[in-house]
Amino acid sequence: MKHFSIGARDYQKWNGRLIWTTLSLEDRHKIGYPGRDDADLVNVLSSVEDMDVCVIFIEQSDGTVKVSWRAKLGFDVSAVAIQFEGGGHKPAAGATIQGQLDSVKEDVLKATRKLL
Image 1 (cartoon, rainbow, N blue to C red):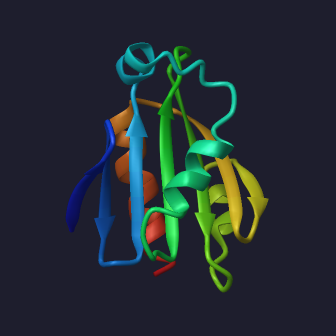
Image 2: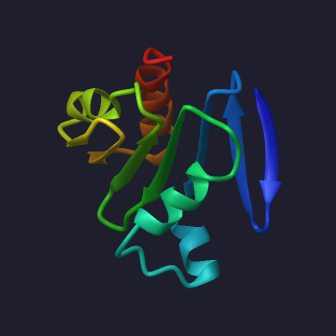
Image 3: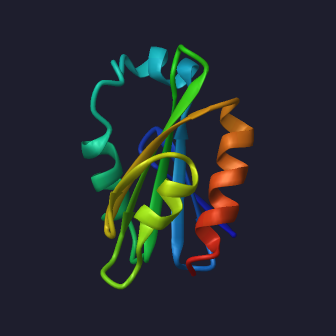
């Protein structure tokens, strides 16, 4: 696993094919991110490096984590989102998952790696 930083955010990369980042409530407060639309954030993440799938985890104040996936053609991230009661399209999907940021991230990354 490779760990690198771009700007003020930290990103992690697995096996050259999966890239992800998290945005905790504390991070959101520090940078003034209102958390209404994550599409721009995940789209930026998907352009960071050559990757197959990217995921962003955004902690919400109600005890949930908003998860968004983007993928290259040939990967169906909606199949992963459905496992977490989410949905979307093959190259773009999302879910809102009840739980702590770290445990949600662990579960989602485990399921996402199975695509690769």
